[in-house]
Length: 403
Image 1 (cartoon, rainbow, N blue to C red):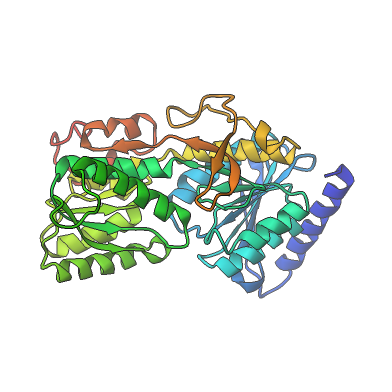
Image 2 (cartoon, rainbow, N blue to C red):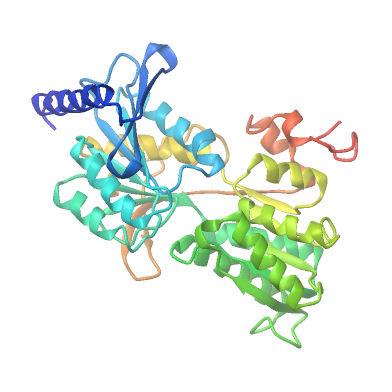
């Protein structure tokens, strides 16, 4: 984008903010960011919010990177992913703008157009629905604006896919649960059906369990029997809890293991188990490294939490967005690789990825780490969680990480 056009766009955005501030009906807040910069949140039409953060020294001559969050209420987005993206952009004098779709695929379409209208030079999209978002991705492509499919797949060849190896996450979850329960009745709590990750995870879980048991299906006489399986709308903990309660009722509590695909849902599962006096005796899996989940691992009510270093993911996405916005081709992108074992090595090149629908996209895939009681020090040493949060209500000395 030429400088004169950038200035015009920023002036237009400034005028919109000033107009919003003068209106009694708009909800606009301004807070000082690190280094004296300002973060402005302005209520847009329909009630969604747009957040703009100027990088240190001002973003007048830098690029504008727009981020579309599907639902900002997830713990990790605000705590890890967003700060990492913002840090990467600040280091290159780029400006961060964002919207929150509040779990609405329809709103996310409008949000992306909103970000484009604000002059975004590249977009990072955490898709609510990987299929529903396709028209917005096409619109961006038509205008020469590169799109990063962030953590969730978008099957469009013009998008760049940055995520963790979600099939491997599923494998890690299943291995950990199988090591504890090599035979018995299993329940599978899957994610949102509109999110490709839900099926990537389930595929990895099934692969490990079939190989371990030598079965073709998880039905009798296989030593592991699938007695309940459900998708979970929006990965919602309360929906997962309701589904788990129903599976317990249907099976007269005869459930020996639960493979839950993320930490939020694992919390709902553990609540359902606790109501039946089964929490801690029925192993449960999860992923994301939520503080409450890592605490459950320390307490023994969750067996494994596959940690995805969202700091590394966010930094990678921020730096790749700047590369793409600056004209780097999809096949010429490289990873920053500065945030530990989960991140790709510095200079790692983009690699081709074929989607379940047969679409070829360019990608950078990060490596997850399974966390059990024996290696809780990994998340402590990384500064992901404090000892106080990890060891809350844990009996002193009962776990090595909790002295």
